[in-house]
Amino acid sequence: MKRFVPEQYGITSLADAEKFAELTDRIVVNLKAIEESETDIDDLFQTTNAIVGNFQVINNDCNDLDALYETSNTITGNLSIINADKDDLDELERQTNTIASNLTTINR
Image (spheres, rainbow, N blue to C red):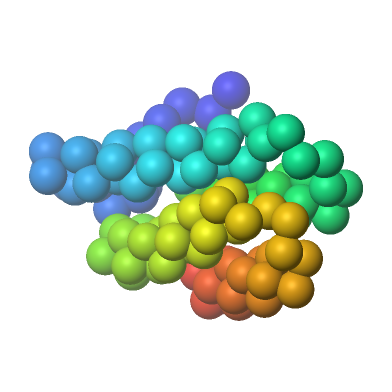
């Protein structure tokens, strides 16, 4: 297991650490809500796994907490919409495309 080094993630103060913790907590809550859904949609499961993988990349590579905060809020909003209306596949596709675009932006 890798050792967590706060400075590696741009965390240099208690406020930075609190912001980072809040973001990761929000991400986990939304991912759990999707995962615990009673609706069994294979594409949703694959998308959730892809999101988790991309968040792991963000966790390893992101040093700009302000950009991460803004993008995470967008992703969280999209995940909430997906969670609220899992049966609308057109909306699900639109939202996952938006999430994928946001994750691509973070990874640059």
